[in-house]
Image 1 (cartoon, one colour):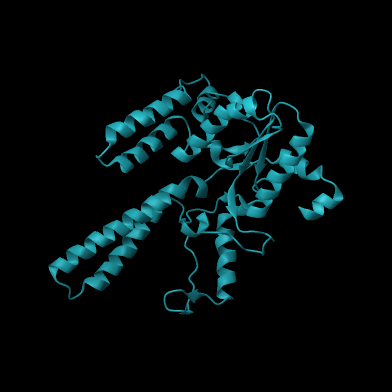
Image 2 (tube, one colour):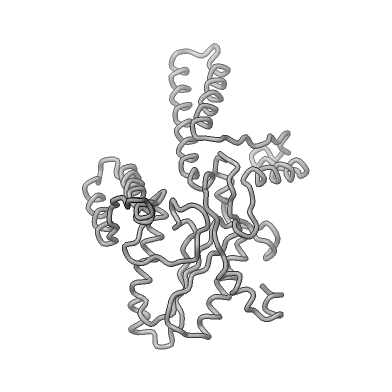
Length: 314
């Protein structure tokens, strides 16, 4: 941002892609409102209480110093794991679920504080899914988060097709480049307020689709024989209990006739599987139990302001 303001004479607008989940632990209707330097979700929650509660101050420079100093201190001693734990701790102190959300929020704060007279647009997409149309319906590069997550509850989930996110970025870029007015504008590219979708329905529709379609096992190159319905859980405790029971049953079935060494190896493997499953579930828990909806009034007005020809193309 500093480089652009000093050396890019024809610079007209700065587009920053963030995430809707900078909302952290907020609940209810989440508005298209930018963060100011030093704001935090913990501060919002504390000051909304009567009487107001105390809260830790968020200082971006201090958070960076803590991260850098800790990386040096942890070097050679479970560095990656300890840095993950530190990031989670720092995020939760300030009201975010994880380090990813905290980093995105601090990024918005820094860019907003440095923008000067440059028009700034922040795009906040939610969970990005496959395409609605181009290059063809259902396309997405890589794995969707949904494929890796553990469905835990029938919460409302905010999916948005990737081409809609791209269209919003292009439309916002064109509008604010032409206007050229200093200031900041924020756009939620989300669906939960205008087209709410229950997580339980996502898996129901997926199940119905796949039982009607052939699925090829990439290893055997044969059709998958059966597709099971996804099981949903109302709490992390229920999920943990289910996983432990499933692993114990599989272990009892496999261990019959095995020697003690094989039994120990199997026990270790089962422990790794359980811990991996719980780590994944905990990672996605904030989003499968999410209690907010994203207002997208600015995005709606952006699209409504297009010409008839533009609306056909977008």
